[in-house]
Amino acid sequence: MQDDALIPVEAGEAELAPRRGVAHALQAMQAIVMRELLKFSQQTGRLVSALVRPLLWLAVFAAGFRNVFGVAIVEPYDTYIPYDVYIVPGLVGMVLLFNGMQSSLAMVYDREMGLMRLLLTAPLPRAWLLFCKLCATALLSVLQALAFVIVAILIGTDLPLLSLGGLHALLALVCGALMLGALGLLLSVHIKQLENFAGTMNFVIFPMYFMSTALYPLWKLRESGAEWVYQLARFNPFTHVVEWIRFALYGKDPGEAPWIVLGCLVVFFVLACWGYDPQRGFGGLTKRGGGPA
Image 1 (cartoon, rainbow, N blue to C red):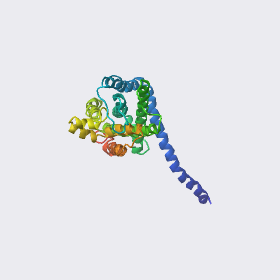
Image 2 (cartoon, rainbow, N blue to C red):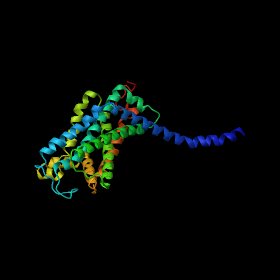
Image 3 (cartoon, rainbow, N blue to C red):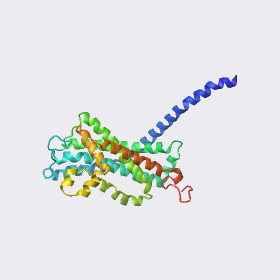
């Protein structure tokens, strides 16, 4: 009789186990995201520096070229536009790019301090823990990008946000932030020391930004005879982040840009998860001999 009485209890426990697992996973995500938000709230200079860089480009660089570099009537625009309107999506992408790369620096720092080893040994799938870190990075990127957009509007930049295109642009922002955050996660696997970070970033941030459509349209590159720059910009994932945001703002079809961004997101994240494999030393978290560092 005792065995029969235990059967419903054991069956109930088996049914509750998946729910508890999901609750545990969501609790871990909340803890990781809140930790990043709390850390960010204590670094006021980080938000200021994230806004100063693109605002200087918008207020100084764009103002100087406002009447020199006209943008013709090409998709997604229905009329001629001033240069400052053209580069805003690129500057939003700049915010996402720099924060994604800064997250790579934070990962390298956490690895050197031992925090990454502690996180990745938690009783949850490694991919989920890295996804939680990625979500925290993307959330910070989107918040900083939205802050920049608000300031850009306040200084007189004309942006069509109060429309369905605004919601599509927000989706593009989130997906672009996730993709660039995944790239930062992947780079953190290969950056072994903080001292190597600056050099590595110079070979990632600046080429990705300048060899894209952030500052000039692709047809301008081809028209000027810079064919090799044009080809590099075409295959640059950052180009497709910027173009997705640009076309979404005006409610136009972004073409293949969303699929390229989402594809790169999956590839970068899978490679990052492989790099943070416990059997390989958490991406350099253990000594060569395989024992704990």
